[in-house]
Amino acid sequence: MKGYHIAVVGATGATGTELLRVLERRNFPVATLRAIGSARSVGKSVPFREEPIPIEKLGDQSFNKIDIVFFSAGGDVSRNYIPIACQSDAIAIDKSSAFRMDPHVPLVIPEINAEDVGQNRGVIANPNCTTTVMLMALYPLHRVFGVRRVFATSFQAVSGSGARGIEELKRQVAAKGSQPAPELYPHPIAFNRFTGHIR
Image (cartoon, rainbow, N blue to C red; front, side):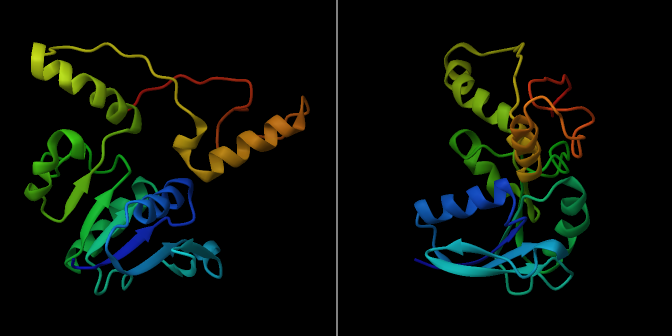
């Protein structure tokens, strides 16, 4: 089986870390792995197949000789660097919301519409995590009954905002009443809830 040259942008974050675990568990044919992060992550490493992979700083040359790039570092990073990855002939798989509404970018849940991957122009988007899980249950019903409309309420975990959200929640819970000032969220997240919209 052919091995692929893989890059993971946001390799030290919550999503990037889990992605590396999935590649390991699925025994994905990785020929080489490039772990990419922000300047503050350089000097760190991430484990992959029992080897430490050093973090490289994200830059214009990060995608040279790469086949597939997984982007899990937020919408701004995706918008700025996915065009560069595509110019390097890499396929970009984006976990952010940056390209979800682009009519030229396939929005793919492999268990439902894997064939749409072939319609990419260098970019493949993932739906919101809640949408993905919900559609995994709804799609079989849709095939049988033809679902026309869905009204849904979701309760999102702080992990949706990455490692920084998880750490902020841990700090606030550990403070036990003397809430540290919020950094990522506009208000304390511990013992609280926010409302909003998803795409």
